[in-house]
Image (cartoon, rainbow, N blue to C red; front, side):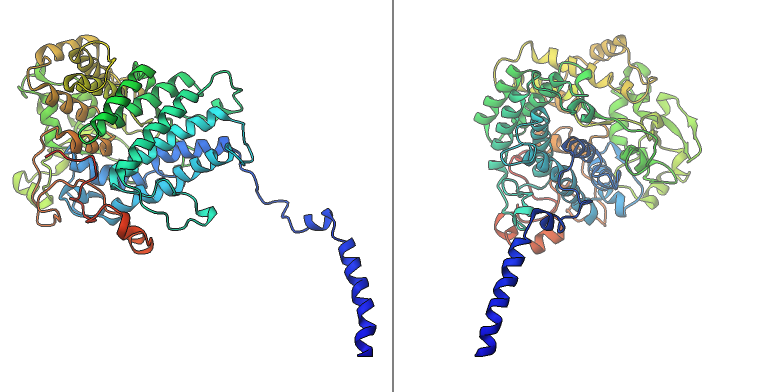
Length: 532
């Protein structure tokens, strides 16, 4: 016991000494001076914009190649392939697990993650609270755009509690699409109204890849997305559609192709970050995806008299480069006569095509115009033509109020906008006003059922944006596509209607079984898909 008493004063003195040394300088020794504690939110916003187009800064073609091209482009019969494997699975309604996974992995893991951080740090308790408010509102619009794409492709998804991993939310609950859509519309309404030109820029213009900080264009895009979403639910939630179509029109939607949101790209310095992912997917020697146009699409562009050039859509030789050979070194055209253009039948593999015509495919079928597939081609997220077609449809169906003009006027404006938007890709891709007028005179509004004409033209306007063309087809039933039958198909000859969830998600998220859209099959349907 005596030994114990001797040590008590010594321990006490040591404790006093240690407490006296508990200084700020000592605490700072535990902080890595090279660690990043605050990231430039303008940079994160730019990264999110880029990820929205191509899936992420580390792989600018993966998302588009797997899902947009290899699934939706082939399903929608605008492009065709003789292959049946990994990136041509959509040709025969086979399944590619990467095509299913890519949007989930890249939008949650890149674009939406970055957007969530911007919104968090500019909000209550964030390190940039109260600052960069226009950046915050633009991020909310971009967030709504990306979440609507995810829910449209999969159905029920984690939404309200998603992207909270830093707060310990590792297995978020799934939310019904029927509750996600009203919140997306509310977010668009609030964020778009809150854009304020009187707020200091704080680097937003330099960060903004789409509009260089033009808040008027951001506002028009926000209301245009609102119009799209309102019309997308019009078959299942008419009251919601009426409310938000009216609000979108009152707010002000796209007025011309100058409002189209494009992601700019460049030749370098990095092929993985700066170049257009769709172009890289098709480029010979790099991606090498077959770049043939589908028979369904070429026949549509050639019109009711395929052998008469006056019957052709002016976009025929805009979207089609001709029949020829495209190598990594050059494009070698064999035949650029519009009358001679020929689309590849959808759902035919190499052996089936050889039985039709034994010549090499490059001598038989039309290819995508290489002027649309440069590495520095812009990536279009949405277009003005869609907004005009949606207004025409709304007027025909009596949805919403306040839309000026007639359905025919909006249809014709949509056709003109769709035909004249390709100069953004290359200055040579010009369609004149007279060419548009001649086409509209030959195929006047009402010469077929108006809703069918609107749906067909919406489909034609979304070349390259195939996954959203697929959304439109599921909602409207137009164009009236003929499904393909192939032994490798897994859908019993049905065009797929949703993406399957990633296997890792279905296996690991404990909320999957009770919240996901089930059965988890390609022919399942999302909430708003009630057509056909």
